[in-house]
Image (cartoon, rainbow over all chains, first blue to last red; front, side, top):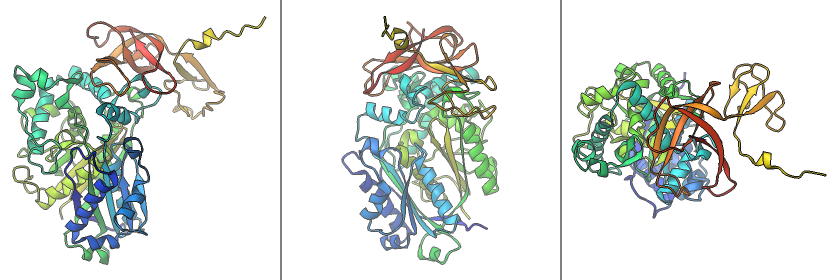
Length: 399
Length: 127
């Protein structure tokens, strides 16, 4: 039987613009914070394996071999260290690899750290670099970008289910209300529905990015990092850490077609459905057991579609739940209490670890006043690689 | 007399692919047939038939992108996803005045584009 794996240390930097700083320092900051949270920086000498998540440091920063650089920067040699790349799901993949290292018996303590410094380049370059994960011949070469695909899928969803631009704005208002209270968020300002949808200047404040998606339907370009310390809960080493472990109850992942137009129905995120089914099965629970969720909302349409694929709402009905405030922080199923990618930000390779960081904070009861979920038992995170073609779902439990 | 002209070859086109063993159509090219497991060797294409993917198609969805990537010196571009009569789908640019409509009939052609550094690339234009 595989050992139980828990998280005993978490670290995070303030998301935003870190372009004056070196990527390795940005990731090391969160790693140091995770050790401090776990009981002290000397605990880094107990680590058996370092796994780093990053998507494109070679393109954003002209910097490679980040895992090797990190162990050296943190005085952790000769600890083994590897880099995991899975596009914007690199972070969740790093968590999965950390879990596998412990479950396999090869390690008892793993540092999982992830981050990205995207604002080292212009917004135009960042958009282009992120688009390189699309199919080279059939998508990237056409000039298509991730916002472009999200715009096309949003239009399809609107046509089929009656979603409106105002519904998209309601998701953003909810996410920004949460993000405004999160000390780690990139955007710490709440927005009103009047400012971005109903008022006379809404079209100027909330301009189109990829029609029908507007600026407030889209995540910002963000720098930042997060880190976790994973332990074998059944090992004597677990007693070295002062924090009670938050258990990793389930991890599932799945892939879908690389080319978006080759999906039978572009409105179906098959990899999200399969990955969440696998995570539920491993955890021995179902959608009704989830207390709150962090869902990959690089574009707010993803929050809605993800919430349907993981079984929270019927297909085509999730935006009605948003209208009814069911996904608010005090609703029956809070979604993106951190502010999500929309408000907290999306440093692509770092996002998956940041989502799990938020699950731990919520399950410990350590979120800021006004955005703490009431008495949570299970938290779920869904992290997207590509346009939903490589997805990892992680479920944590408070035992 | 030797004719060195290569005008025909310079006309840009984008290919669809047919597995000759089972007839399944593809765009873009696969490395293995999902139906009969036939392998494609991209240096010989033996066992696979290449054909031009162009002509009449139906618009499935579209967007107007205002934040174009590096190198695109335009205010915006229209993009769409279409379906051809043979069932193959493709994504590419749309050239037309005003807003497209889902379900409208378009015609696909291929151009060469050079917005990004490096060799020009082949791009679908639906109009």
